[in-house]
Structure formats: structure tokens, C-alpha cells
Length: 256
Ligand code: ADP
Image 1 (cartoon, rainbow, N blue to C red):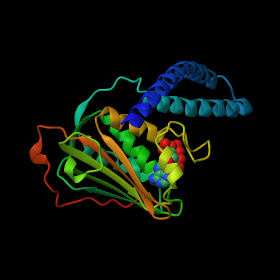
Image 2: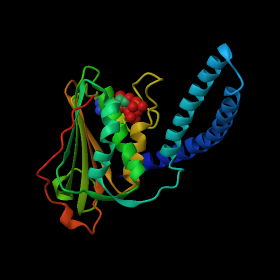
Image 3: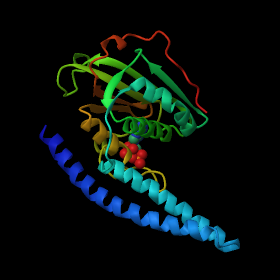
């Protein structure tokens, strides 16, 4: 518990720092992009090609500051009752395009509906981050499986959450797996094993923060050479108990 609160405090101060910097950069980038847009109407030839590189780079920088802002949780968020199954099916197209050919995406909603109280955009982001990581861990192809269901906390004895009913999101891959060293540092902000133009090291720290804020828990199991499984538990949104029945028709969606 002590380690958890030290980590939480460290994440929070890093979040404030990153959020402040990201906010200022975002404003500056908006100015750069605006003036670059004005210029685009005026220049031709080689200068236009150079300008288009400037706009591309500024656009990439803006998406990075967007990620930083999300990590720092400076964006106000609306909390709704959201069905995890809808998060999965709603992102299906984007996820399939993200993983590309050679990787199969299998979605298994194991209950008719899996309601949680959370921000929809953040849930989308969590799923996307986990699936991008799964993809990056399977350069030679493989299968990424996304499962949703409900459980009682007694089904997850290792998870330090209060008693009760939880929604569960499981994302597993048949990728490279990771070493114990990587597993220990996985949720640290800016920790990445990827080249600088691919990884920011903010994906999983963002997931960790969002899940924690929603009163949930994330855990990981990984076997080198075999694959990795992320399990997320989020408090089940009361008021829709009838929806936690098994769904006889799980969906399967081929990737690419
Ligand atoms: P990034 O993806 O930008 O590197 P993350 O915080 O999402 O940042 O991930 C941190 C690191 O955790 C990755 O660089 C990778 O080494 C490791 N990792 C995350 N997910 C997986 C996975 N599914 N399989 C293997 N390694 C993973």
C-alpha cells in the first residue's frame, strides 16, 4: 500500500509538470500551425514542400501534447454509464486498421452488457493503447484477444479492491512477452523500450492513471516468447444487474 501511494504521488507530480508544459506547448503549436496554414496559400514550389514538412512535424507535436494532456488529466472529463462491450465494438474498425494485416483481432463479449461509470473517450484510449502495444509486440503476426465480462472480486483474490462486483476487460496477445525488468517498470511515465519515433512511454502510465481514477485496478501477466495479458477491473455500474448475463454470440473479427 505504501509503495502504491508513493507511486501515486510521483505520478501526480509528474502529471502536473507534464500537464503545465503540454498546455503551454499546445498554445504555441496552435500559433505555429495557424501561421503555417496562412503561408500555405502563399508559397509554391520547394518552399511549399518545406512548409508541408513543418506542418507535418507541428501536427505530430500537437498529437504528442494531446497525449501528455490526457496523461496529466488536465482535460475536463464527463463521466457516464458506458457499456464496455460498446467501447470494444465501437472501436473495432479503428483497432482492425491499427493492427494491420498479419494480426488477428478477436473480440469476445462474454456478457450481454458490461456497464461501468467512466469517461467514454478515456476508455477508448485505454483500449487503443493496449492494442497498439499488443501489435508492437507481434512483429511477425499473431492474435490479440479482447474479452469483457463481469466478475465478483472473490474471483480475483490477488486484486486489492473492495468487495463487490466488477467489470473486467482483458487484452491478451501472442507476442514477445517481456522480461521481469520491463514488467516492473511498465507503468512508469516515459518508460519505453521502443525507438523514439514509435514510443513515448506514456501509454500504460495513462492507462494506469485512468483505471485508478475510476476506482479500478490493472494487472499484467507476461511470459517471454509466449505473450502478455492485461486485466483491468472497473467498478460495475449498479442499476443494470440484468445485463450481466452470458452472451451466447461472441463476435470474432479478423484483422487487416
Ligand atoms: P510505449 O508503448 O510508448 O513504449 P507504454 O507505456 O505503452 O509506452 O509501454 C511501455 C513499455 O512496456 C513498452 O515500450 C514495451 O516495452 C512494454 N510493453 C507494453 N505492452 C506490451 C506487450 N503487450 N507486450 C510486450 N511488451 C509490452
